Amino acid sequence: MKSLAELQAIKDKMKDKVILREGVNDIRIVVGMATCGIAAGARPVLNTLVEEVNKEGLSDKVTVSQTGCIGLCQLEPIVEVFEAGKDKVTYVKMTSEKAKRVVEEHLKGGKVVNEYTVAGHKE
Amino acid sequence: MKELSLNILDIAENSVKAGATLTEITVEEADSRLVLTIKDDGCGMTEEILKSVTDPFYTTRTTRKVGMGIPLLKLAAEQTGGSLQIDSRCEKDYPENHGTALRAEFNKNHIDMTPLGDVISSVSTLIQGHPDTDFLFKHTFGDKTVLLDTRELKAVLGDVPLNSYEVIKWIEEYLKEQYSL
Image 1 (cartoon, rainbow over the protein chains, first blue to last red):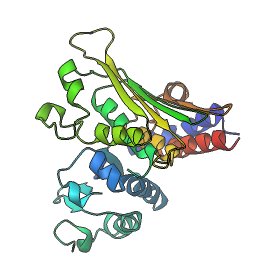
Image 2: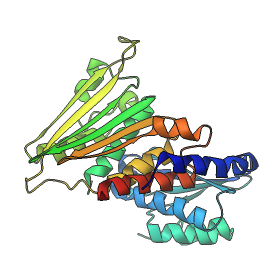
Image 3: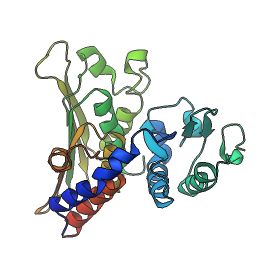
Image 4: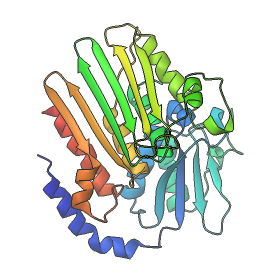
């Protein structure tokens, strides 16, 4: 049975972590969650990113967040990667499977998955 | 939209954008009726904007954030013989008591009824994206009630953000458990 007492335990466990974490997230990954994105399947893409970033132990380095319409509705779901000192990378027509590869190769390995980007994708 | 839960996610995003501190989402199922309400204490809309939000082709910069979301939900409700209604109080005219309340009614037995889908995922996605605002989610069906109030969670968590991975997972499990009881 889930109880609020469990949340207290999560809080106690995270106390030290929170202090440690401040200011270290240098990659921001943003999912377009307007009507166009949601209708195209952004929800599972976002959930996969949250899940994989945690699974790969990247949560100190990567923040997953949401935004509105990016303006390329026909290419949704769109995922943008912002990294300090680097050009923004825009991934289009994303799926959960593609999101896993982006976490593995780009966020973890540092190599952009060109075939999924706005410039590299094929109709 | 393939699931009503996606419409819920979409419309609740409007509440957050309207600066709501609390967004209340309720789904009430009784007999053949499903009633969805989304109520917020955000900035509200003027009467003029309110009249045009259900028109998908009404686009000006001020209402750009509304776009297709409400017309799609209206269509989903009306194609089952149901209806959609929105009341709003603009902050300018009601400085103390402003916000928007949407109510959509569906006939669940209609052949064109959109399935409710994965509401748990929509609720956790909302909280993940907007940990600083509050959400109340209530789903009643039969004699069951599934309930989540982020204000209660925050009272326990203090400064631990609601979108911490562990907390989001807890929220999903907490809701899943209530559905399975």
